[in-house]
Length: 260
Image (tube, rainbow, N blue to C red; front, top):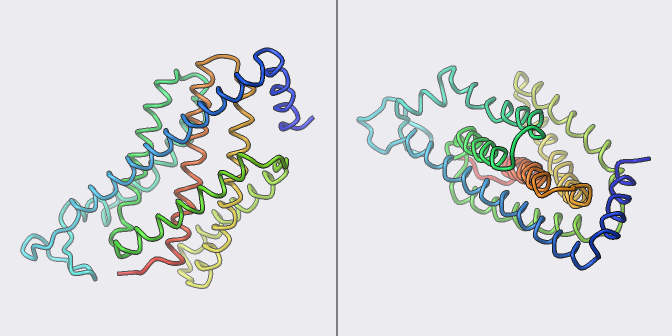
């Protein structure tokens, strides 16, 4: 029996125990919590990213020796987070937090999982702060709104569709692994053509994952049998959608962002 079949069985059992009206209200509240957590996480990421960028550059030419293409000057803090070996720690820290959350979520309280998610969002903001050095601020804002509109439409479809899209999971996972491998290879090749292909395929993969994860998160609700479990599942759902949004944004920015 597939995971989706198990979730459908859990949904049927839950309906029998609580009634359809209670399920609808509970599901709406649960999904709203997921989206709220995700939105707050994105806000934290944005604030931290811009704060790090603001501390990393200055327009005062006497403050630093290295001039950036956009006319700003990099500060000692900027050298620390963008040039020194610490940059690798900042880049990899969010990945470590994802593994930690995935491994420990079932042992955490709902409040502990929530705190870990906020920490992860802040670390991701520090990791993404360099995009303000690479792309113009106007294009970052434009691509963000394009991403938000696309994500909203895809997630809404994943939530409302009656079609079982659980079969997409293995295909999308293979695509994700391919993107990761190609991205690592391109670090050494520096091929613009390969980067373009990665971005195009990445947009397709994360668009699919947005719909897939939304349906999966919806089905996860029916399998929860306590408010504590529902709280943890809401955090994990928010994390999944947050990652889909961030990666979709980065891929679209690579395609449509205007470089400094």
